[in-house]
Structures are given as structure tokens and as C-alpha cells.
Image 1 (cartoon, helix red, strand yellow):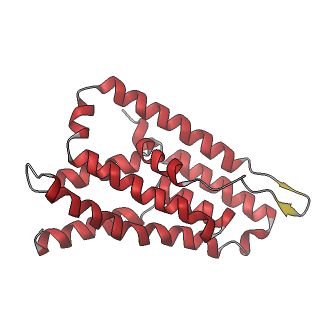
Image 2 (cartoon, helix red, strand yellow):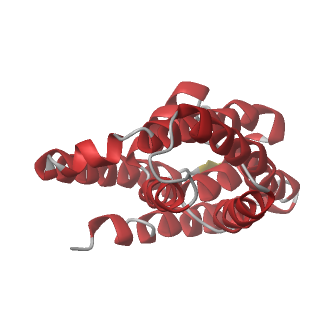
Image 3 (cartoon, helix red, strand yellow):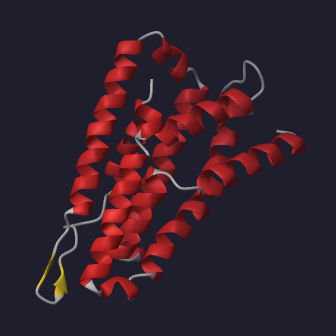
Length: 199
């Protein structure tokens, strides 16, 4: 990988990884509700799950799925349904008495890995990146370093969102503030469905 390619790829990774999307929204909400330490498995699952998706797309998965548009549509709508369930659970987390009743547990490693396959931003990022940066007809030897670069630069970008959420925990101890925050994050998740469902 030459220096120009690495610089261009790095700029794309940083810009796409630090901007809002389902993963970062959920990581920030997890940071608020569970703290940074309990969010680390979720964070690791995002990175490894997306890295695996990126590797699959780079080695031809997207071209295969393009041959089966009905399967791709089913994947999109199943993903949308799952994200709506997550948004509903987040928005309806209630507080009782003086204590905040948080969601039961943070998303685990394997759930976060699986979530990448129904995440619209992840698909757009993976397809765009692998269509732009590997050389034409690149093999695994050229694709793997790009995947590792994406994971190495993407991890701190996503960690910023989880860390920001964790830093807001004390401010959001007030049940009303936490409820407003959770509803806002749920609405952000629902809004992120637009690019996946638009014709």
C-alpha cells in the first residue's frame, strides 16, 4: 500500500467512523446507561464485526448479493425491524421512584458483530471503501491491510462516542434528563433507517 493510498484511505476511515450513525448512537447510549467499562464488549464487537463485513465485501460478497435483490431487500427490512425494536426499548426505558431503571444489560460482543449486517451505514461504508481504495482485482493480501487499518482507526473514533456517553452519566442521573436522552437516541436510530429503506 503506497503512502498516497494510505493517506486517502485513512482520511475516509476517520471521516466515516467519527460521524453519527447507528453504531455510534448505540455506543453513546450504552456509555450513558452502563458506563465505559461495560460498553467495551459492544465496542469490540462493532470493530470486529465491521472488519469481517469489510473483508467479505472486499472479496466479492456485495457482487454476489447484487445477483439476489430479493434477499437483499429481505435483509434490509429485517434490519429495519430489528433497529425499531432497539429504538423502542431505548425510548421506553422508565425510571421508578428515585432510581433510574436502565436497560437490563449492554449489547454483547456477538450481538454487536451480528448487528453490522443490518446496519445501513456499515453497508454503505463497506461498499464505498472497497469500491474505492483497493487496487483493481485486489486479492486478500491487498485487502487485509486495509481492513486492519479501518479497524485500527475506527476503534478510537467509536470509543469517543462511548466515552462521551460515559462522561455524561452524572448529568443524566436525573430520570427526566435520562428519559429525554434515551428518546433522542431512539429517534436518531429511527432516522438512520432512511438511507436503508428509501427506494
